[in-house]
Image (tube, rainbow, N blue to C red; front, side):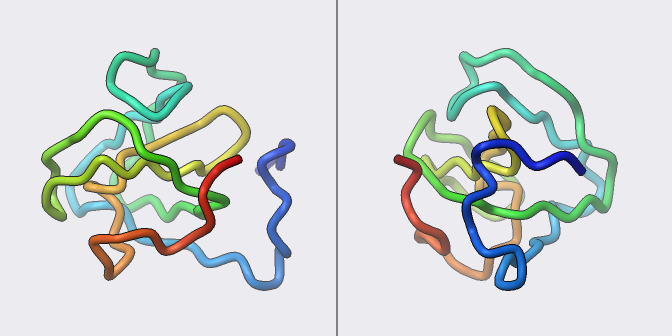
Length: 95
């Protein structure tokens, strides 16, 4: 995977999280459903979270959340489809 400017976290401490089972997750260019889809993750994908930011509220597999996870430079997924084990923030806020 090519790391962009979002990859400022120490790679050794970077965690990967499971996405919702049976879901092909849309990856968007920004933190909301109004942003275009840049790619679709396959079922069973694991994603890193470089930072998190509030955006469109989405009801998904893991509940309802307005948190969006930055998984690569210019790529965001709804936290409602990522198994972080928390309803809150698990990474720093995107600056």
